[in-house]
Length: 163
Image 1 (tube, rainbow, N blue to C red):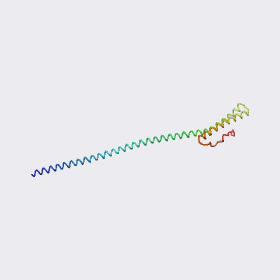
Image 2: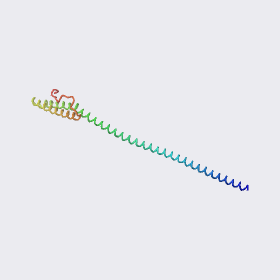
Image 3: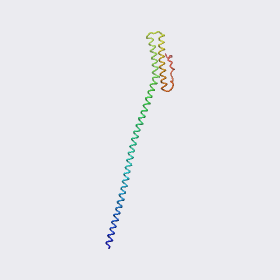
């Protein structure tokens, strides 16, 4: 009888140990799955953050390039406008008076060289001055219309005192 109780007790102990070992295995397996899940989630979040950062960097570079190109176009347009304005101003204020003086000198020189009488020379000079005056007025009007206002300065086209 004693032997039977001992064997039964050993069998229950063995079953209890097996159940405990099985429970321990299940707990350890569940813990390992939880750790793997957390590690994979962490790696996935890091990868997503890395891709997001790379995407943002690409977008920033692209947008910066577009902004620099637009600024360059605006700067080139401003430089072109300034060059046009300064060239026009130069033609109106510097070149036109030189052309007028050259025309007056040519008219006077032509009279002396050709030996034309004084009244014909005066008529030619007057005609040349009228042409120069008209050209100067046209240039001033073009200049004032380009600037959006009346011409500033000048002597209203009266060049007879300078001759």
